[in-house]
Length: 266
Image (tube, rainbow, N blue to C red; front, side, top):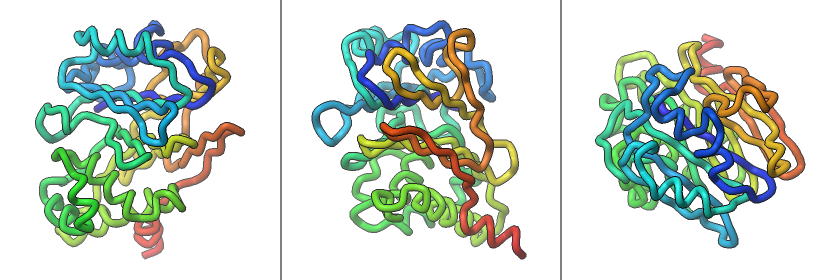
């Protein structure tokens, strides 16, 4: 599955996380240590925030390790809030529109995981979108579709609730489709002010998620796997957790979608 890294704090060069560390995101694109596959070569992307409310976006289909433009941009761009992703496709063609992060207005989103049985419920989930949300759909991935569902669930007012309600829509669609849900979700997203992350699975085997203070910029990282095991104090985020990182600190709260709670109660 994919690898990703996100940062919030004082402005730092993107290369401090994406390309420079010994086990940087570039290194993880060809030798990930905690992923199902060590190679994540189906494209990459960056979303970063600067002086405007909306994030900048750069995505391409080359493997991250072989794109000199990515290394050049990371060396030149400084940001106090950014998301970076290398892709290992679990469905959908290798195309720029299928590369993470995805953006909608000021929001950015990236994902590691998958919706099991997606092709069986894709039409139902797409039909559940409003016309306005469907018009924003550019690619064919489950990740982008899930993000668009989040935007319809009061993402701005209730980020944790929006993820919970979007997951409930997936669970309901799976059960209507005649099979048990098989959802793996380790995602990061931002509105340009705060950074959010979630680690959840319906089957007890959630993709990895870590966080650590980042001394270079006085901020904090949240990542799929550590990029420097020797120099940082990495904290594993427990499964079924929702993380909120702001300028004033971090909180980690339990996360169980409403549909999953109902299933447990039956």
